[in-house]
Amino acid sequence: MLLLNGITVLFMAVFTMAVSVLDPATLVIYDPKLTTLDEISQYTESLNQRQFQLTFKEVGETIQLFKNQEKLYSNVIIFPTKLRTIGEEINGAKLLEFFNKGGNILTITNPDGLSESTRTFLNQLGIYPSPRNHALLDHFQYDPKKASDTHDVVKLNSSNVIDNGAIIPKQDGDLEFNYKGSTAILGNGRLIFPILQAPTTSYTKDLKNDDLILENNWSQGTQGYLSVGFQGLNNARAGWIGSDEWFQNGNDDKFGGILIDSLTKWILHETKVIKVTQVEHSHSDGTLYENRPYKIKDEIIYKIAITQWDPETSKWIPFEAADVQLEIKLLDPYHRLNLIPSGILGDSTIYSVKFQLPDHHGVFTFTTNYRRPGLSYIDETNTMAIRHLANDEYPRSWDISNSWVYVTSAVVVFIGWFIFVILFIYSGESSIDGKKEK
Image (cartoon, rainbow, N blue to C red; front, side):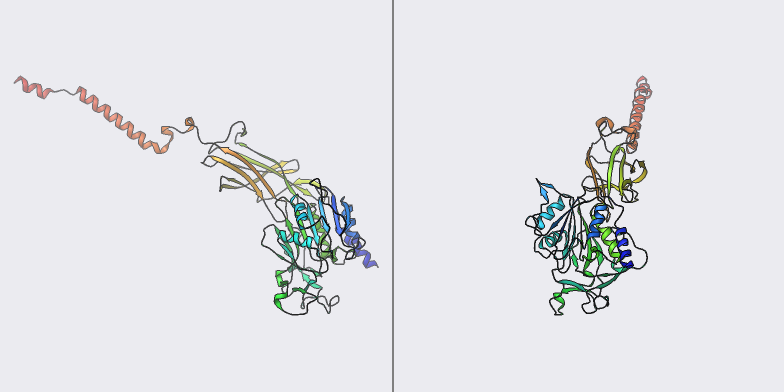
């Protein structure tokens, strides 16, 4: 009893100290045949403590995600369901529309529960979960106390965690934890963040089919993934976990609690959120573009201020990084410059750089495109025309070093001609006159 109470306290302690920067309206969809609210009460209570406004809906009920083309919720959490569809008005296309409009979606499946709506939505993201009745098996690394016959409780360790701190905080020491659930195969999309990978000795097969044909397996070894994150270019976030056991009360797996806590906070925009608070650029003397448009080879100063949400204090704090860059491009980048932290402005860090514009006129784009695994994407773009020099702005004669030889030649020719004319005019004809006198 004391052990169970200790586990409960640990589980609740993990889910603390975070407030989302988004609207707290959250829809929780569950199937009472697989998941009851009492079984996940600690998980949902942690969301309530973090000020989320939860709406619970059973699959099959009338569920709406939109009203007058506007989202009714900021977040959707979908637990495993046996039904083919979640609801009459919720299918894969509706979930994708919700995601494209900035909604965040956490999907949980297991070998017994995968709706067609969830599967279709995940497939659009490049995540292909195993079909129903398919489970991860491992005849070498399994827990003999919990799966002595079926071998479907697979033992995992630190080598299976490939997140690298993008979503889940890096863990010290060796990890050992169990997993019982399904797997997914991933596409090659750059927006996918794998979190957990299946062991090399594991495979995923249909539990109702006893044949040992290799081609019938859904995944082999490290082809399978157990948890995945995804972030769209609009900064909407989605995640998938192939097991619901870590969400249930009394979960005694410490790392499982850390994983679902970190993934939930990441998807609901409680962690890893950054944004731009200010962008400005001007001539090196401070004159703005509106007052004096840029011309080729002008000296320019570019500044951008970036802030980060701190889940521990629920405040915005200055964002620190050494790899923020600026691109100046027409069709292709002319310059790619590192932005240097140059000061603090309120809750933001100012990154700046001084540079010379290209020796080419046209419509240029100043772009700060910052994409790092787990963090919100920054794509700040400013487009402006850079003019060529006016007729009276070009350097003249002796100011052009290449003209020195031509100017010198012209001056030498002029002086030589002048001397020749003087000598020609003032030279006498004494020898000719002397002959005439004789």
